[in-house]
Length: 259
Image (cartoon, rainbow, N blue to C red; front, side):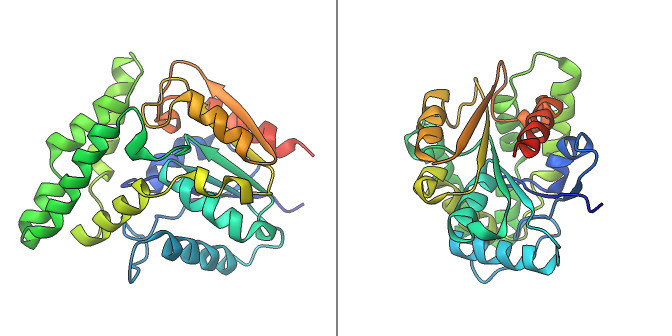
């Protein structure tokens, strides 16, 4: 019997490593986790706008030569890419799963001011000389602030692990231009842009302490998607893939089993 395939798409400045904890709990499935273009071992694109990412994903899925349509899962920025893909190519996937989806425009969220500062941060990165630019955009201090801000667990060992993961993988972007263009794409779009066009059965997995998209906005997003189910994880924020990967995987498995 052929195993069902789940393709996992990571978030902004992440790599496939960030979703490996979820993958470990998806026994009985064939799990594929590519690096997004512009990051780590990902492809290089002429530009890093949403159309380019969706085209890349369409080609990537086609190149897998799968016998049956896969299940598509996107985390954070990956939720925007996969939602846009599902709205355009709904007949090529069986189900859609959005983990910590960007359910509302980032510039309007509770961290809107920080997002605007980040816009300036990435813009400046493209104006600096190459060596200085990469050093600026991969600043350990900035990575540390981001990590500690999004991590909600009080488990010291887990917090240390998450910080280490971010310091290892958060700066594996290809160029200042690629990461800046990808950032612009991430803040200028949200899943809400495509919600009403998503006809694929969809699961939203969200955290109650997510600072990027509040729970109330996630509930609104569920109402906008025609066939959406919402699962809520308490006491966790935007990093459910690190803090509660077993619970995320459990919801995924239950959803996949639904007829």
